[in-house]
Length: 387
Image 1 (spheres, rainbow, N blue to C red):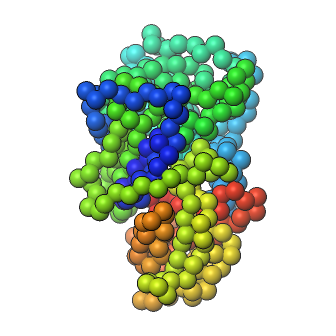
Image 2: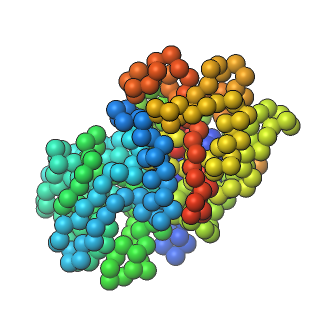
Image 3: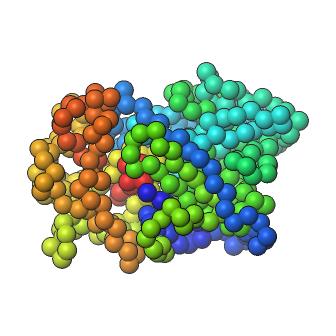
């Protein structure tokens, strides 16, 4: 599936995204710049603890509601340890990208995360560590969370190097499948991370690329629909229309509430075909988040879905399970004026991963889960399985 994310107040489809662009800091590239930078990504699975997936996704949602995608400590003087954890990142489905940092460069494998805006390197104790080189510059900023440690040269794909603000944690945990994080959220998520200038924000990698490499701050994610060795890709600058067979539509992103800074949108979801579809949520605020594994619905909507599908909760995994897909109908995501169909097959946990995940190999599991709306603000999350 193709997701497009643009720094303008529009949301683009095939499921697609667009972020509010800051008109005061417009860095759109001249027309003679390359229109498209494509970088291959690698899908990864971490299935050993799938039994905790429901609790894990709800922890992630709680932290997203507070605009903190990670556990953190405070760096009070620019040199004290900064710790981060992968506790709130997807424990099942991951997507990574290789980038080069420094001169001479070190290659880091970074998690692609739409729910944060950080650019973190050197977080895997067993992987490559960040080493200052001739292109490293101190920021001179006191930072909280783990932003603004240094500026350094970053190369993505075959593009020319750009200078990006990097976070370099001194202490980290849980980083085993990747070496850091490439956040693709909005710049607004970085507000409050600079101790001396809490109202200032830090340019994201998409902002930086739009300075000199790409014509506009747009990101398109192509995520493999299968779980095999097929790779995905990220297109910076404009969508690669050859990857999409349907038309692309636009709708405004949400600009108020807890979804600000994320790939946030209002949507109505119905279950069932045609005019007989049963509404599950109506104009609910939600986000697209690759760091969440499942499709999280508000509790009432989840219970309605469970009743309509005849699903029961598997006690060992917490996932919904059904006996047959014969009567399972489509979900329809109505975003703006565009209905997007989520077929019966699309609602299934990938069955070829059942055994690897410690599930019953012959059972049928669903990827819809209870998002528990306590705290409010973000009512639903379209996680990695929707991407």
